[in-house]
Image (cartoon, rainbow, N blue to C red; front, side, top):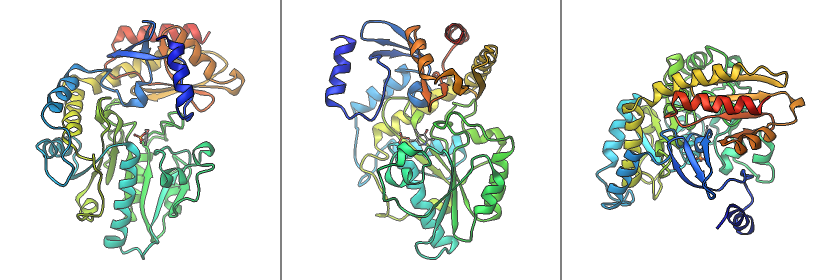
Amino acid sequence: MKTQDYIDLENQYGANNYAPLDVVITKGEGVWVEDAEGNRYMDCLSAYSAVNQGHCHPKIMATMQEQMQKLTLTSRAFRNDQLGLFYKELCELTNSHKVLPMNSGAEAVESAIKVVRKWGYTVKGVPKDKAEIIVCDNNFHGRTIAIVGFSSDYDSRNGFGPFPQGFKSIPYGDAQALKAAITPNTVAFLVEPIQGEAGVNIPPDGYLKEIREICTENNVMLVLDEIQTGLGRTGKLLAEEHEGIEADLTLIGKALSGGFYPVSAVLSNKEVMDVLNPGEHGSTFGGNPLAAAIARTSLKVLIDEGMIENAAEMGERFMAGLKMIEKPYIKEVRGKGLMIAVEFRPKAGGAKKYVKKLAKKGLLCKETHANTIRFAPPLVIKKEEVDWALKVITEVLV
Ligand SMILES: *Cc1c(COP(=O)(O)O)cnc(C)c1O
């Protein structure tokens, strides 16, 4: 089968909820992928940061192969020999007390919403059904009904109501707005350290510190959604480290899987997670031994192979190179680590045409909203590969 045959099949039988580039990928290794005709591309999206460790990382693959021959799923009705080790290693690495394992990012977000609400009622003393959670404009936390209900993105919400109540949205990056929005019934502030899907929106310096202080002063749980920013993407294990803070709850997913098998987690302090009792929350696949084993190795290779430091170093090189491309229609180059965006002025006529030209030259990336391209290659990218990407991007953005 050729590229067009695969595309025709998808179009005929698949839901139409994505608008992918017409590249059909059949293989991947590290930062490189190959299409049905054998053309090679550099992957500068990394499956929205789910393959930070690079495609088909050999050690994660070996773990998966080994574990899948022994045991894959027990359900949480029984215990398995991987889950406890996964908890321990994850807690030690992230300085957390308790872990709740789930599968997708959206499920981790939903789980956090449930536990902070329960904490609000049982510990903080919020009256029944009055718990409020503050979120930010232009957030992206996933696609469930509750989550899209507090999204400010028209396409995400429109046509999917009615939505659950209890969410209040404030401008991103504005600590004073948080202060003003908090009431005695506020249980949590849910926020991304950098807004990824909104176009790599970086808050002002000091924002994370300020919101940490405001939450502490008001007995409000700070929930950081690090599903995209976490696990090395920004040049630190967690983006919260850039300002030396610690969230009360941290959500991770995406690269926890190494790209192999969906796995997410809510990392929490003891006080909040301990409000959950048997029967109050769960997931058939959450905490399964295959996911736990894969996640353990996905974390291990991030650390052992220096991917986080590499993200910081290569990110600087990548961004410095992009900043040298001075064109009147480029509005801004911004980023942290290997989470980088180029924003075009509206007069450039949209980012999509550059994305298509880049693909023709062997570099895969994706626009986010109309005028921004995100560059987020796997964290294993090498100096020469960054330079190659910069050469291609410079040629296309002439
Ligand atoms: C991708 C993402 C999610 C949702 O993760 P899924 O696995 O797609 O459900 C939530 N929050 C952020 C910040 C994300 O980038």
